[in-house]
Length: 65
Image (cartoon, rainbow, N blue to C red; front, top):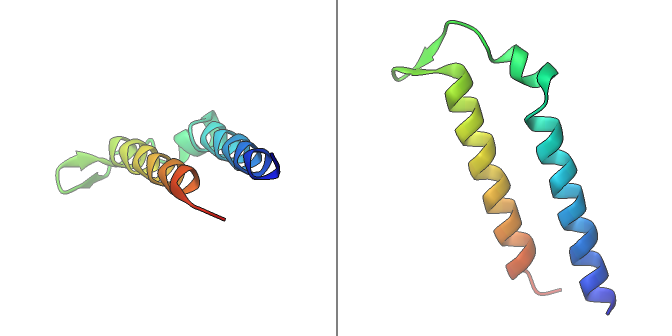
């Protein structure tokens, strides 16, 4: 039961990190007219942050303590 509690706490922390990453102040920082490889910076930030959150969720769920 303790393992499930730790996993739940980590997932809640990951959710809060996602809320922070996709909230207005950080999105406004990346909303500029700059391109990375032809992709606007805001889109690159959104997809990179999304991929990182998915990877972290996979690590949390697959990790055996």
